[in-house]
Length: 310
Ligand SMILES: NC(=O)c1ccc[n+]([C@@H]2O[C@H](COP(=O)([O-])OP(=O)(O)OC[C@H]3O[C@@H](n4cnc5c(N)ncnc54)[C@H](OP(=O)(O)O)[C@@H]3O)[C@@H](O)[C@H]2O)c1
Image 1 (cartoon, rainbow, N blue to C red):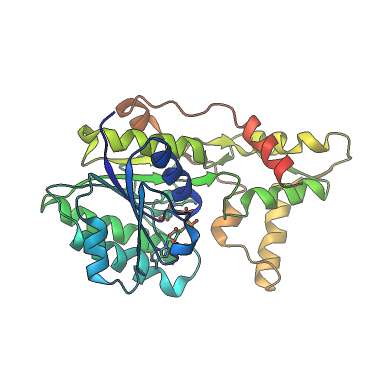
Image 2 (image 1 turned 90 degrees about the vertical axis):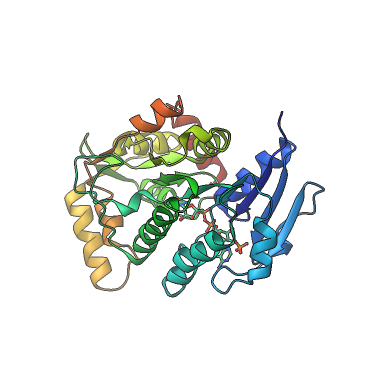
């Protein structure tokens, strides 16, 4: 196995932690960038660089990016809107500035939310219409990267939908579980799709992309959509015996909108739309170029998730 020098930003996060674990186990030398070095256990193969991408120390960024074969840029501000421009856009710009394009490939994690979900099928070529600040900054970072490609940057951009894993920060699954525990049987249409993907699939794809420079210059949407009805059925498995109260999705959405308007519910318009969106994300491009197979059955993960969160 060829020893690589791998850089990871966001290695202390939900996705980055799993990627870091892989590279440590595979015996590669890893450099990571974090604001909180205490979050990382000491390891002979791991060098920790500490700076804040919102106010980066250029010398630290230069040391971090030096001699990397592949740089995975996963760091991102997902919750504090006031910080999103500084971290997701200006932080990415500072990182690009420090990189040596002749030595290092970049693998950048963007987001499916940059697209307009009104389209029936979303492909890599679909219209991009981000609707919140987070997604706007993710698109702005992609645009910065595109400009740098003209100057020699070798990059692959991967755009996941909602990533499912035990340590996920999105409250999607816990909210769905809560509904089920309240005894609510949400009546969703068969064509309503949850745009989700398993973290283990994402890690597998990131690893593969790291070894394939033939993919440089490509953008990939990364989702393995599943009917919401199926997701709900798998989640219900632990509560088989209880009585459910059927609730039409339109009525449910009305309740959510009301709760949002009254300020008693913190749910975004896109969160509300999640329960009725019939659009789907095409994953044909990554399947073909990477010969990638997504995990077909969500059941084992969801059953584990329910056990873990009960
Ligand atoms: N989770 C999803 O469903 C999902 C879906 C689509 C795209 N993505 C993208 O995937 C990436 C990783 O997401 P995640 O869910 O793993 O996020 P996460 O758990 O919130 O982790 C965020 C990571 O970013 C780092 N970070 C944040 N602000 C930083 C700053 N100012 N300077 C340096 N590092 C900073 C954090 O490191 P420290 O706190 O250690 O500094 C942490 O490691 C993000 O770019 C996100 O946009 C995620």
